[in-house]
Image (tube, rainbow, N blue to C red; front, side, top):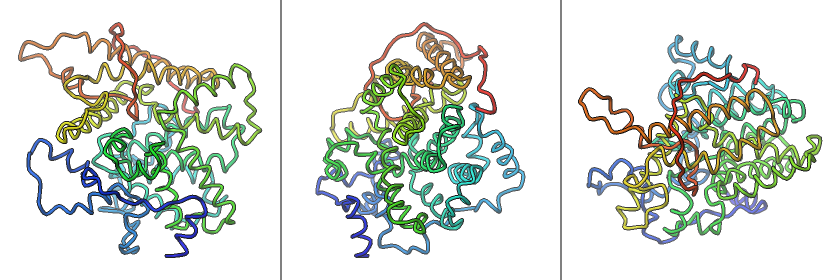
Length: 447
């Protein structure tokens, strides 16, 4: 144990200590389900509620024998029809229309494990880096376990979706011909772990409730630092890179952190300005390690908020899920007499206005620059989907509420979601209505 503490201190790891603020005893996930009930179980242990926000410390004093054991039904004894369909889907994993929700059902809720394991094998990274198969499997299972399944949005399915999008970007010609095997390994692992142990609330909430994570990371990239440290904790607990030289391990952990920290939405303008400047000056050199790493950061940022660029049927589902997570945070804030965060008041916001604002001020500027860098069919497909999706939300905003009993209430229900990823501070905008019934060129199966 002392040795573990010493190793962590060498790379700047600090123990995640709890403070005494009363809001630290809030179990966000339990409140999500109990706000409407008005009752609280007296038997619920506040210590367990705090531990749900931890990752590499959560089971510090529990049996390691139980860690990394897949819950419920392991993949190898699933119904053969389902595993067969999942394998068929993996043959088209590079298709931008890949339905991660269907894939998650076909893998019995193990989409993140199955997808990441498949991609690492497909690239030959397991053999190249001499990764122990048992350690790798245990690592991926622990990663999936440490995502909160009852977060509407920031859960393992979102991580799997980002990993699939990252794979699509890694195959773009500008990247595929330049990235090293180490770059690809880091890109996939960063995508899989970028929101690890996300509590379902945003950074401002943690800061205003004086949460110990906010104190530990000095109110700067609080969640992203926690995701990174949680991922490193699992790498060390499983010993996935234990066979590598110490310097290589530390470099891998550092570069992994640099990628995950780039997903901090509050630093969006900084990264976008740097990216735009590189493109204006045409000085991105993919033979330079630092430039390749920067491009990986931008690719992960795009993958993290690519939901508005998916086909309408997928994008709409993500929109509703992320907005529901916003609204659940707002419900918590109201219950505890806190100021309700922007976009989190379900009585003041709709899926449409949040979504249109996000696309206008966050997604469109980022993907426009990405299309300048990668002027490919996939980039045009993503921009096309986003334009149609934005028009569709504008059309739903303008539709009158149904009057007759025969009218379907789908549009009313659609007003409870958003589409991207982390909460943004973008204001809303109005857009001319439209539908998503138009067909646009799809990204090729090879991109």
